Length: 241
Image 1 (cartoon, rainbow, N blue to C red):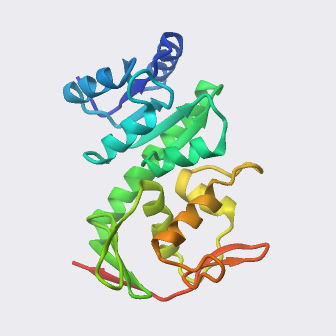
Image 2: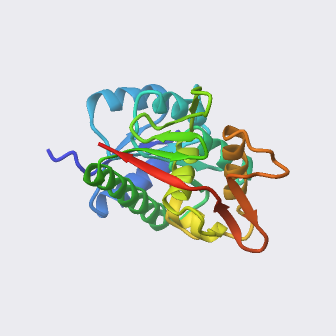
């Protein structure tokens, strides 16, 4: 059986699991269902998946814990589902390494669009890495190791990055000295436009600045442009194979 289009749905609501599985099956994916973390790990042992749709509120280990543990051993894309629309829940999901989030209730076709966007972005990133042989990006005394997916500080300390932080920094390093607004950043990192109340980009940049040891009142690497967005205001050099 072809496993290239397998999607794992982890949700404790049987009706939601069944609805999503049926919809994904109708749209070219092979869906496998799991009701909790134990079933998720068992499914991962048995199958190879392209992506996991992971509910935040689960019995036992919640989605944040599962995502964090998953990220310690796998780079499989994750879309987090949450019944809570609080921005903090979304940010925590991204900080734990989720690739995107979707608050409940939602239309199955919106989830399908998110799945396709995440998979397309993941595949493009893999192709880009394979084609150009890029290993490291250097800026302002810092080094982004694109193989290990972590930062090396000017004092040689290794700084770990969440999936969201890594993607955000990578976008800035690919567009140095170019002003990027919130809509562009959200589209580049998550494949969609910002909604007026979505502050996730601002919070992610604040956390990224902390990792870069920036002065919050006067950042020098990622600067805020009034009524414009953000800009990486330093020179970037690339190191290849």
